[in-house]
Amino acid sequence: MNTTTSTTPSTLAVERIRADFPILHQRVAGRPLVYLDNAASSQMPQAVIDRLVHYRTHEHANIHRAVHTLSERATTAYEGARRTLQHFLNAREEREIIFTSGTTDSINLVMQGWGRKFIAAGDEIILSVLEHHSNIVPWQMLAAEKGATLRVVPMNDAGELLLDDYAALFNARTRLVSVGHVSNALGSVNPIQQMVALAHAHGVPVLVDGAQAAPHFAVDVQALDCDFYAFSGHKMCGPTGIGVLYGRAALLEQMQPFKGGGDMIHTVTFEKTTYNTIPHKFEAGTPPIAAAIGLGAAVDYLSAIGMPAIAAHEHALLQYATQQLGALPGVRLVGTAAQKAAVLSFTVAGIHPHDVGTLLNQEGVAVRTGHHCAQPLMQRLGVAATSRASFAFYNTQAEVDALAAGIRAVQKIFA
Image 1 (cartoon, one colour):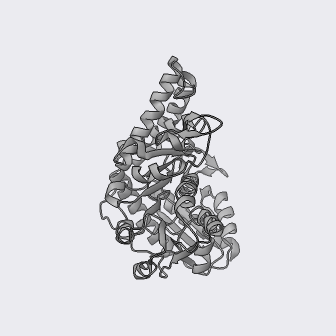
Image 2 (image 1 turned 60 degrees about the vertical axis):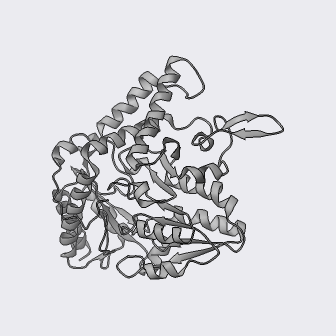
Image 3 (image 1 turned 90 degrees about the horizontal axis):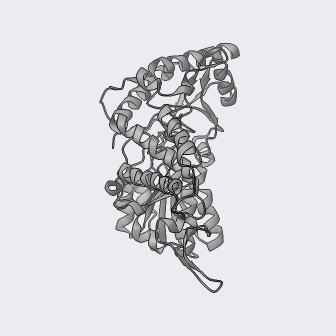
């Protein structure tokens, strides 16, 4: 896994890569678009757009349930995308890859299918202060239903989890750890392998929210040894409405289905229903076929570039942006972990983050502002909101310069 500790320089032909992304070649407020909101949603290359169009014009049909040509084509493409995701994550088996609507859906699937079956009154679930709301609220709902308790791993002021405190949270009632691989608000890369090993020493399974990790560096679920891993397609150059849950086959076999309907069944009578095998047990009804195929094409695109090369380029951008914004008077960088992915949150003295984002947009620069669906983290940091620039492999140092220039322009307005 390549994180920000790497010193490998960027070797990407970025201008050639940018030519693959039609949306980047437009103007906003009369200026070239500088898109720095990739942690919310990345852009799609032409190859993915073309694959979606090809499906819709040559393969569109429902899957698994017909013997006609279009259905066979669609089924082949859909299941081919599953194999692509298996190899991307280095999952042991193809059946350990479940298509969902996104990270939120994946986490809720585990909550409903595993949590409601195995968590009882008095049990405890470990989360961290860095979590996105989608990895907090489902567990709150379960805890309220079951009479369970949430335990929270604290962090230091840099945004790094305190592992000694994490270790101290385990006891005989600990049933699950659910933790983000990378913080969406700060970019902190958590020591997942170490956290998984500690949890497994106590016999506790681990779910990893990989929404901000899978797009940025190589993820090997066997090396991490995690039990579940969730991420979204739209953050890694794929379509919206599609995500993945990797689950260890033995655990998936034990789980209750999350949704009932077509294709997730083996037999149905009014007296009794028996369920299909995994992964189909968790893919009720007509799935997002085109989106899954598009995600497969996005993974092919990323893999052709190479995840180590992507990580190195984004690391170089993060270092450069940290230097440039850190040198601006009145700008405070929020989140300074030693290991970070390509996320840079900041505040500008005397200016609300929403005003910063609105005025940057007038300079053609797109950033995210707000609490980033991480309100408990904002409370820990003592801020209501931040501005967040998040980078992808198609971003450039010139775009970082445009961000810095835009912040200076905002400061002049409020001077």
